[in-house]
Amino acid sequence: MSMIERVRKSERGQSLVEFTVMLVVLMVLVTGIVDASRAFFTYLAMRDAAQEGALYGSTDPTNNSAILLRVEHTSTMIEDIWGDLTVTPSVIGDPCVGNTIQVTVTYDNFPLTMPFIGTFIGSSDQTIPISASIEDTILKPPCP
Image 1 (spheres, one colour):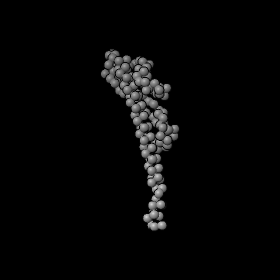
Image 2 (cartoon, helix red, strand yellow):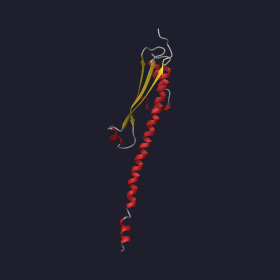
Image 3 (cartoon, one colour):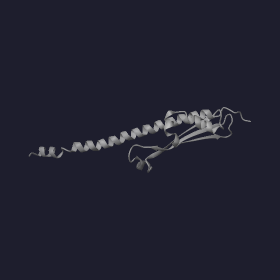
Image 4 (cartoon, one colour):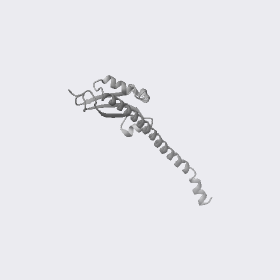
């Protein structure tokens, strides 16, 4: 057996090993991109819902239950996670014209599908918190 034949024979499985290692790395990257996309989509839906709540709150800043209803019924995406969301409307200053209302929507347990990512980000239960906050100017009632 010549030297070239022995080298070729010993390298036969090298391509398969390289392919396997790269496939694992590629799958981890793709899964991470999918998780990041899902989290970003959820954040956008929460931000839009918070914007609707702040818009309603700009005309009726003391009616917290109506603000919560406005946030809840804004998006069909929010319906799936509504039980896990926390909505916090708060008025900065007096609840009258020119001051600010802030609506914060928080989702504490957004589930990740990528295995083992929790160990890298410091979460033991494979979830991350997502929060969206919007401020709007109060339009009415006038200040006394």
